[in-house]
Amino acid sequence: MPGAVVPTVRIQAEDFDVAAEIAKMTRDRADIGAVVTFSGLCRDEAGRLAALELEHYPGMAEAEIGRIAAEAVGRWPLQGLTAIHRHGRIAPGENIVLVVAASAHRQAAFEAANFLMDYLKSRAPFWKKEHHTDGSQGGWVEAKEADDEAASRWKQAVPKRN
Amino acid sequence: MSTKLIYFAWVRERIGKPEEDVELPAGIETVADLLRWLKSRGEEYEHALQYPDVIRVAINQEHVEHREKISGAREIALFPPMTGG
Image: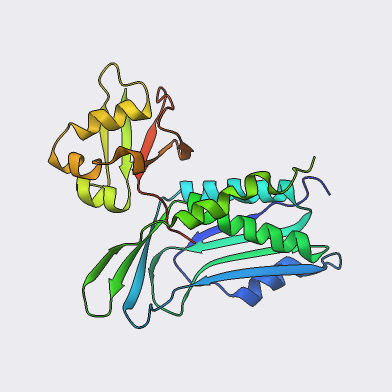
């Protein structure tokens, strides 16, 4: 089904409902055989972290995740793809990010979700600042080299579909 | 023609403002030229852009390399490596 899937991308302050997003994607269809979801949550770092403050670049955040999602749709035979990223103050235990990928078979759904997260971590314009439980400001989270490496491994991994 | 510069995260904090409109002097052709010129504009810029290699740049809301030409850019954003997800 070339060109059939238009990814859903949302950047929002409010929380999301994982089950509702899956239901939205699979409603009234019987051709989806696999749905993979990834949720990223805020950790408390062993009690040290009071909250994360997520700054983003409005406009570009949507555009960049849209570009990554469009590439995923081009590379894997997907029947649905949703990416939601929150911004603002997020407390430990709360959701930060959601990816939902649907396909006829599991492999494409797993790989597309993984690809989307790897690229999102190193290319989506978001920055995390830590707030500590002792009241001190923890500063900006540093980018991990491992995240860049995770993204670059996809450059050769899968041949592009036509 | 003035160009809108936008700053995020610690780049924004160190420069001390979220955005500004600037008139780029003649001879500023690439992103690298822009970073070098900005860095010379005062202590706060020097502090923010001390290590230009780590600064990521987007022109008109798309990632670019430092060698990219900036002619025709309406909006140029400077920010640290991203930490979303």
